[in-house]
Amino acid sequence: MSEVIDQTGRGRFELEEEGALAFAAYRREGNLLIIPHVEADPALRGRGTAGRLMAGMLEIIRARGEKVRPICGYAVAWIGRHPEYRDLVE
View: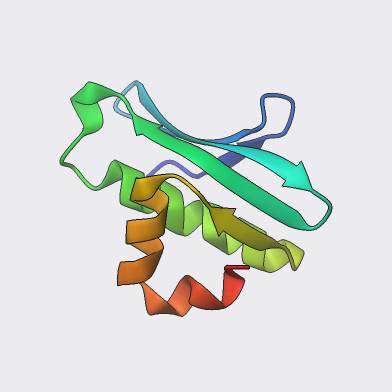
């Protein structure tokens, strides 16, 4: 299984699976990461890749002691369905 990678130079977290990419764009405001967009390659849709991306990204954010502000509708809904990550939302 692939791992989520923080591509800081590109301002996004990435997860590659089966040669296709899912990513969550972010912009940083101090210790807060604002997530305006999450996208998965059409070949990955419906396979849970975006959910694995979200979980991996939020685990990285938690390990760094940071917070997140999801703006993207998918990110907001995903966190809403996963209460174990709500403590990271500012």
